[in-house]
Each structure stands twice: as C-alpha cells, then as structure tokens.
Amino acid sequence: MFDASRLTVSLVDIDDTSRLAHRWLDLQQRSRHSYFTSWGWVRCRLACLPESVRPRALVAEDCGRTVGLALLHHQRHRRRKVIVSNGLFLNETGVDELDSLTVEHNGLLADTTIASEVKRACLTFLLNQVSDWDELVVSGVDADGKLSHCLDAPPPGIRRHVVKECACHTVDLAELRASQVDYLSKLSSNTCQQVRRAMRLYEQSGPLELFEATTPAEAARFFDEMKRLHAVYWQAKGQSGAFANAFCDRFHSELISNRWPHGEIQLLRVQAGSHVLGYLYNFVYQGRVYCYQSGFDYDTDPKRKPGMICHVLAAQHNAARGASVYDFLGGDARYKASLSTTSSTLRWLVWQRLRWRFQLEDALRLIKHRFRILNSSAIAESSIKPIDPNQPTGTLPVTVKD
Image (cartoon, rainbow, N blue to C red; front, side, top):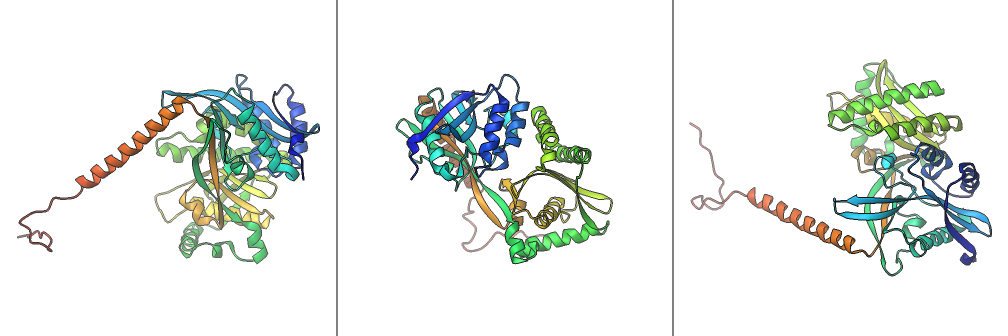
C-alpha cells in the first residue's frame, strides 16, 4: 500500500525549459498519456506562446522523484459581458486564440504505478492550497479516466460541474487485425453501401490511392494544400477555418518541423487518378493515430463523400502499419459515428468557488433556458391552425378546382 503522505506537490515558475524537458521526458516513459500531454506537443506550445503568457508547472514528487507534471495558467476572463472570473487552466491558457489548438485526452502526466494517488494529491493541492483562482478549468479529459472521477465530492465551498460532454469515436485497428475482418464489414450496411458507391464513382477518374508524405518538404506541401482546401470549405460557410488563426498556423508549422524526425506527424493525400479527394493531418503516438485536421475537395454530388473515403483508406493504411487505434477525437459529426467501431466520452470539467457572480450566472442561465422553452411553446402553438367550426368533425378540408 502506497503512503500518499509521501507526496509533495508544488506550483513553480518555468525558468529553465531544458530542465523541464528532462523531467517531462523521464516521467512520460513511466506514464500512460496522450499525444496532447507528450513533450513533443508541450515543447512546441511553450515555444510558440507569446512572452506575456507564461504558464507554471504543477510538480508532484515522491521522495525527490518526479511522479506528476502538468502546465497551469492563470487568466482573468469575462463571460456574458458581466461574469468576471480568475481562472486556473490545466494545459491551456484561457485565451481563446491560443486555446484554438483544442487539447483533448487532457490530463496530468502521472507515474503509472501510483497514478490515482498522484492525481488526487494534485487536485487536493490545487483546491485547498492554491487560493488565487475562482475556477479550476480542466478540458477534454476522458470520462472513464482517473482524473475525471478524482474528488467527485469537492471540499466545502467548492462545487464541481460538467460543462459539457461529447463522444470520442474510434476504430479498434488491433481488433480488426486480430479478427482478420475487413474494416467495412464492421460498419453498418448503410454506411458500407455509401462508401462502396462513392468509391465506384471516384474510380471512374482512376484508381483510388493513398500517399503518405515521406520527406519534410513533401509534408510541408501536403500541409499547405490541406490548409487551402480547409479554408475553402469553411469560407463557403461564412467562417475562416482553424488556420486563419496566426498562432494556430505558427504552432503547427513548428510542430511538423520539430516532430517530423520523431515519426509523430502523418500527412496523407488521397486521390482517384489525378483527382485529389483530400488531405489528412494526423498525429501518430504510441500506436494511436489522432485524426486532427483535414481538407477535402467537395463537389455538388452528395453521393461523392471525399471525407469518408479518405478516412476509410487512412484507417486501412494505419491498420496495415500496425497501429492499434484510429481516433477521430471529440465531436458528434455523423461521419465519425458511422465510421467508428468503438467510442468513449470526453468531459469538460470546472471546479468553482462559491461566488455571488456564479450564482448570478446560474440565474441568468435558468432564465434563458425557461425563455427558450416558452418561446418554443409559443412557436408550436402558432403553427396549429384553428379549427373551422363549420367543418364537419372527422373530415379534412377539400379544395375544389374548376
């Protein structure tokens, strides 16, 4: 039985990135974690953050040995123009532009042998010993993970609530290989029919092929083309797309350049003959393929489904390479559910101190909710046509044409 009293937790300034790198790389070899808490991701994020944004390191130690790590950032922010809060953000900044990277499978890096104890000690420290926050924000954690269930009953004066939940759909590539079953046969008959029909339509232009970038220069070209198609799609919807954000674009250019030699970056192109269907930008880490971004060439024929075809070929490609999971990441998009064989849940959690402004926010939210219900009822009632008293019961009005 591990004695949790041996754990010491502290929040320290990051004065030496190289020292943090040494501790992080050492600990991640002893932990189960996602790409979003790996040193490759964390290092690039620290390198790209503006000088005015400096997170601190949450450090847990057991007799001088590092057993827990995370980044925390204080940020004062405003919601609904009136609710002001001092937030403490786990592996995020609290600044929308800088958090557009969207961290998922978030959490604390913790020694596997004592992960539960480390996460509980870190949360207890933040809730009880760090006082300069109104809200502790933990985004995109696995709902079935230890961090999601740590301290379900927070200490007095603090409440925990789930801000949102969303599905995380995946393809179990290891199970497909073990069962020697074709991927498409694991999907619904309707999805399988749509995919095969779309494949036949594209094959009229030539054979369907998937190409993976094999050099940094080729990866850069694939990335630029993906961004172009991505922007075309979102601009048609009146939005700018992810890479219009200068920080996001700079971060991913740095990530691709820095992590390409480590085999963590995957850029794919799918084409039928000379016609390019689209590009996928994935992360590959510890047997898991994270489908992070994409750009597809959509046309007017709804039977052509470039996104589905690209993902099907990419899943098959990564299964053949020995990957264990193809992860669509969070979101309830229909194609993710249709192409997955398994799913889990991601949670966005907030611990709040009992402040009057949060009670005001709750009241405003309740009023808005009730107004929405009343408004919906009014619309429903207005759509009901009044009954004509002269119309015989049990018959429908008939329009007679000459």
